[in-house]
Length: 107
Length: 134
Image (tube, rainbow over all chains, first blue to last red; front, side, top):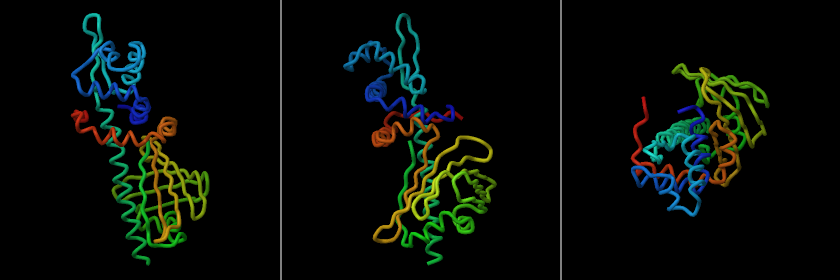
């Protein structure tokens, strides 16, 4: 996953329909654009476009089987985003704790 | 996308501002060695005893109110933006820290939608995430 992975992931998930697609894919092993379009009030073409964005963010991968492409979730980039938040957040928690002690020492 | 933390300290605004911006003070709690040219465009260097070093460039200095900079690891990697905002509250001084992910455009566009992001990330265990590839 590239350095700007979390940013790309959050951009991909900024759209409600794309989040719903992620939700549907999370409940299934895999699905085609046609199957997913049946779940959403959008065209198959729109679903294919959203899948393309999710794919670009590394959230979804497609495997061509005969005439159809089956998509499935590859949520590793989500875990990168979560990891960034967790790591950076934990470091700031430590720093703020150290700042509190620093201020107390001087009080 | 950003990390945001808030804490209230029982100290005056001047005291907290000094702790956040004076190199001698920062060296007592933030890093082991600190160089900081506290003006927009000024450079900062933070060194820790574990050998890591972060290089910073100051973006904003509003005395007693706001200190913002961008920084990155000396060895490379992503640059991130950090903002510290001070506010007087009943019990002392509240410090709000934000550190933004580097893809600034997306982060700004998404700032208002962050709440769903937290929910989504909170739901991740149910998605049975594969372990990160080594």
